[in-house]
Length: 67
Image (tube, rainbow, N blue to C red; front, side, top):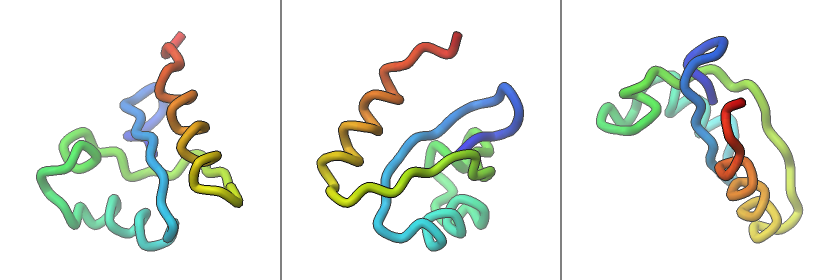
């Protein structure tokens, strides 16, 4: 999720992508990171067969530098 072009990024994993996108867009949790920084634009997703693979992918992305 992103706040916009060159904006704040949020990376996470879920079993229910449509539901999770709705939560971000509706700011269902007003105290969350995505609500605070306005990250409600889905810019990328990947499908994984195993939760462990998805978690490793999430951790890899979180280790990247913005540059």
